[in-house]
Length: 533
Image (cartoon, rainbow, N blue to C red):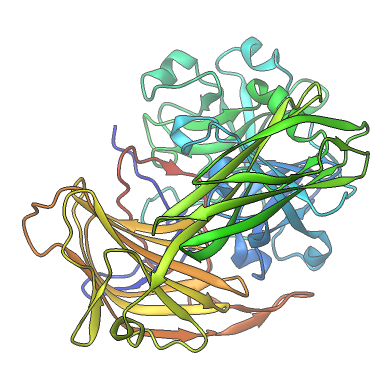
């Protein structure tokens, strides 16, 4: 089965290729559904990129759990941090007049510890708001519901996704849509993919009706005769509403205990990228807050990382509504991405331990000849051990051996647009070119690409890493990446109520991304997400 995966993405101005209509991702929506009643799904949530208007910034769905918690798919937020997104709760239309009154900041993101990618399962995450809010909460299915439902029972899935089943075109609307699809016998799903109990599939053998990208993270619900219960979370699929391919959903029944654990009231930063670091020793503090209704006692903590140690731990006892600090020392010894993981053990019946982590990239100053090619005010340019090199009016990757890599890091980039011309000549299984923004994968190629790329930078201070890796040194052709003509701009501006100036897409209804093509190493899956880079 051929699967394709959509990743976050660059604008690529085509040289020889025609350009389809604009979208933040090659995205599709609820297929052949109907417009939802404005009052039908009060627990529905739109996930929106920070400092973007709601319509153009929406990239995934979610459901409100009550208090300060939201349920969504892990793949929606795996490449983001809390400061990158907002939640818009209890709306039906992304452009309704009072949409700003329903918009809230995210404080923390909790991704399932065993999540790798959508098609591998465990595609579930909890978002913590920065305050409690009062909206209608979704009813979650209990452990017994999914095993006791018969194949063929109708489920309802809703979202703001694309309504065109064609993989190459989109039809975006601002209103919430819904569609009914039948639960499929698990054995039939197994004929399509190695499915675990934490995932189920739904849909019709001949396609026609389905959820799709842009609907990711949203709920699929079952009507029990008196109320709706959320049975699953929109996860992924091979195409949308195509014959012979079902939609796949994270099984909420399977994750009841995990959801309960993450919504008890522990508040902590599961993972944080702290930027570029020169070789040396650093300290970092983690802060844990106890929003539960009982005093929490911890029985110690362990640490994993390069020359890392815990130097302060005042979390032995955390009072109700109290907070504590764990401070670590860690050493940056390699010029590469690094991570330090701390595991904290507690006496809480449902949260026996939790993990907190800090990540970084080790850097050294780049050659002046390379830095001069990236003359962006107030930014700084760094390199890995195998440095990029200047070649006439461009910079390019060096000659590398088997399993070697080269990184170019640009720091202190303000919100705006970073553009450059790129010549990418890589080959699947031999080499790959990746771009990371603020420690998270932004895009990757294992193919030949030529064009002008634009990275949209949303934070006030951004770090961009260009990474070229060679797996096999012997490769037919001129294998390298060449970049030239760097430019920074704030782009066209628009203002959201109560927000900052933000970049406005130059075309189409979907947002900033005008053309996408991705070839992912390993298993490729079409995750049902619309990215808002």
